[in-house]
Length: 301
Ligand SMILES: Nc1ncnc2c1ncn2[C@@H]1O[C@H](COP(=O)(O)OP(=O)(O)OP(=O)(O)O)[C@@H](O)[C@H]1O
Figure (cartoon, rainbow, N blue to C red):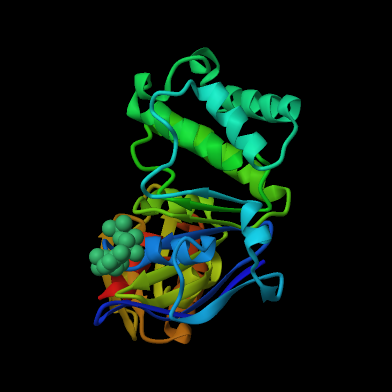
């Protein structure tokens, strides 16, 4: 587990990280989201030791992280890091060797990753001859080649087409499932929503929300519900007359509503289930959980 504990950082008189604390748990994917200039890259650079913090510390499994620990991390920096003129396989093998792998293992690891990422036919081409999306896949392979103990990826999905997103998602999920902590930043909230177990939202250098995806959704779910009735003559219009309820969407047997209290919502369900089953039955009744995009809008406001 990586702990970011009370990190602050200023550039000149400008504070860009202000007492930032969160954890990246082992075996879990943590999505790091925030608007432009929120402080994601600065935080990641501090985790990797590329930049120092003015205050606070980064811990690995409870102890201050050392340079030796960091050498075993995998990092995909915002500015990317591969040589444009070097062949992809050769370059990844070289990186594996720099991390202490034997030549054979480094080449085998690089080859397997490039195959997995759909670059098997481009392994012997130079990086600069690849499309931007394929260069991005190669950068991801570079972060993983030495089988790192933790992974920190700055915008790994930017510039990838939907097929490539799926491939990268699967590779990262597999990697996390082996027990390593994975932190990745992204502006693509739909991808974060699908991929991450935990979410950290940063705005103006402060942590605005953090927790498991489910906990955040539950925390921000409010009291919005959806009722769907089945039956040829199903009509949910009566929900409008229920006390303590305000209907936000009505369409035949479907009603979405906000309830003042849980009791008011429950009364809707009781009434729906006590209706004559030959007229309408309850197909579904559930609280509406907000998407990550909705939660994000709410917390960065
Ligand atoms: N070396 C630096 N000198 C001065 N200011 C910096 C430096 N590095 C970052 N900043 C400032 O710190 C703030 C946070 O930048 P950072 O790159 O961490 O944001 P970010 O969340 O990664 O943004 P984006 O999503 O746009 O990449 C920005 O206002 C940026 O201009």
